[in-house]
Image 1 (cartoon, helix red, strand yellow):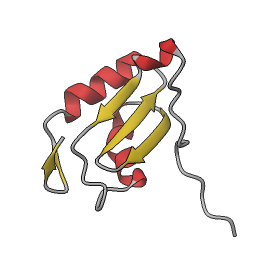
Image 2 (cartoon, rainbow, N blue to C red):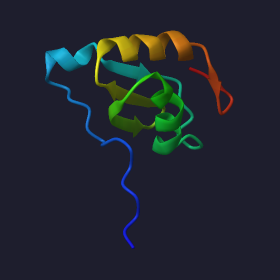
Image 3 (cartoon, one colour):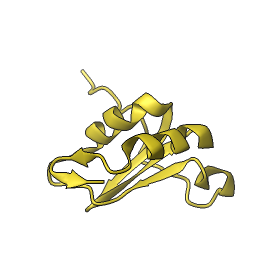
Length: 86
């Protein structure tokens, strides 16, 4: 059996200006503990995620629209995840 594909791709479109307003930067992320699947699970409640990339200490989540991105920022700003405040 093949493993289930991730909910979102690793791609966040860096060049399309329309996508900039629907992308969320997540800083101060403990990526030794928090994985891509965790980020997707936390942020998917705000809307459909079309891209997610996790890097050392931070992540990006790409939504289908700006409204979802704004809701995610409003809902998660200051949240503590794995002992660190986002």
